[in-house]
Length: 411
Image (cartoon, rainbow, N blue to C red; front, side, top):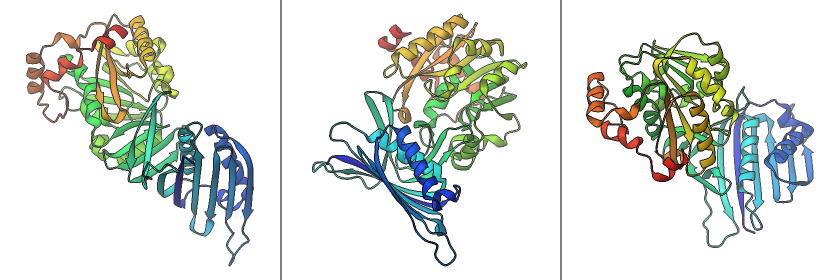
């Protein structure tokens, strides 16, 4: 009996009407996402209700799964859908597969509003959860997650990414892409301050910066705290990520998109680097994780393009993943950086939304962020009038680069 039951009530669905009135179209959608989620279809039944008062009838259907079932009901007159996915976890844990299926279907129906629930079934020792627990796998052996109050957005973007915005009790609004937590209102400062300020403070007067990715605006907002910055360029792949961030994540970007020093370009970051003729004091790779479609940017070829875009004394900054949960990936990225740059300085911190101690790196021909002591960092912060910080300070600067032994040995 032990299992997971996911339910979703979807309102004002923006999908093609055929998914709400045609059994064949709805059935094919459900079959495809079931196969892609890794669940096993064994039988199915679909029924289309007759028209009523000149309005098309809805569709009710069910897929019988080796793991249990998927059920879907549509109300075309209300552009509404209810669905539920139940999987048995007695022999193996199918929870992640069920979550992939439910999330993909929600995105396909494109609701204006969604109510979701995650219910643990059949375990007398576990109280069922009446609100949704959203999980992310750290690796094949580990996962973590957060309860959500409401799904604000579930969308398949024009670039093929699954974009979700949640409201959570822990961190406020949270963005997730393809099942990976990206940023949140209440703890974004851990990541963005550690990404931006160690290199920006180490540079004597950064004037131009390029951000590959960074569509949430958080990194740009931190960069523009430095008064010497004259121009920041964001090269963001996905226009839908940018639009969702502007609408839902103002506490992250703080309306930075209205700053005249910021220019936003939509398109492939790798292609943007290839075409760039401008030289930048800082290039930031503010990307999704290395095991996502951004993987090609975590390579020596991409790092070489970034190096060519740097002005003398400039630096490339990027996150490199968790040395705890992806040690070989971290080791490989740092090795690729060292093929290109003579100086690579790794740093790290615990990032709450990512559920782990996380690695970052500053790579340069000459810029050395470890060469500043706390007094020098404090002096530069004071001279630049940078006070609106929640994580980074003069003492933290050095601590970020004081690597634990296991991380030091890895890189």
